[in-house]
Length: 326
Image (cartoon, rainbow, N blue to C red; front, side):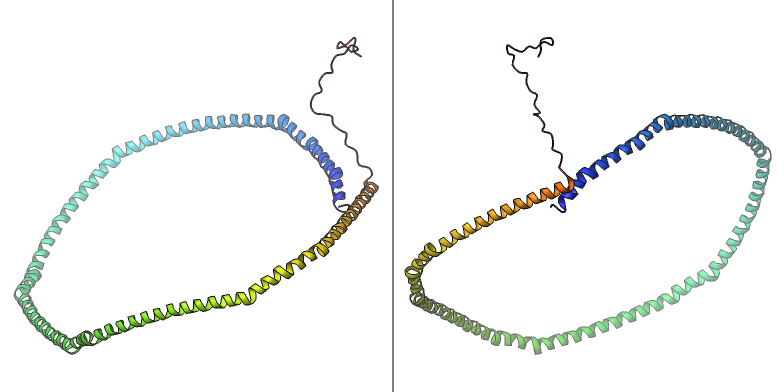
């Protein structure tokens, strides 16, 4: 503390803090106050002037834009009137003539198309449709009916064959596998299983009785061993503890342990007193070293009570007036 802590505390308290306060005061005087003055007396009037000039310029721009817009609107109206006259007097008659011509050409082309469509449809009907309908009705339909009848017969024959094969396999498997297996299960395995169940139940009961008997026997043996261990080992040890060790322990406690504890306490008090005197000596040496390095610290002036002191009581030799006051 004397070499590291107190020097840094003194440096912080008497150097860093005053220097920081001085820098803060200089910053306030040299930067903040001039900046506030410049903002209030220079920047604010300049900003108001710039805003007024900008408003005037904007008003002029708006006035010019309104004039330009009105002139453009008038020009557009004149151009629209000219285009309307051209459309009504020139483009409309030309458009009606072109529409009449296109309508006539369309009627001619429609008449030609109807004639060509009629001829082509008559040719397609009598050269393709009618022969195709005759071939479907009198050739393909009877052939399809015959093929369907033959396919139905073949399917019925195959179904009957598969049914016969399935019945043959079913009855063969039933007679050769299922019925013998059922007979073996019913007349052999089931009686053997019941007999095994009875035998297993009897074996289980016998094992349960044997387990309980073994438990009673082991319990009796354990109690006998416990009693024997108690009389051979526990009781002698207890007698030795009560009759021999306890009196010896009391003697050792009263004759040896308590004097040793008192002596240790005395030594501890002496050591604590020696350590206290050593700490006091170190504290005094540290204070002398600090005074040698930094000099005497300024004594803080004692502050009086914070509560207001009441007026003293009046006596025969005192007065409250300004002329007669002592």
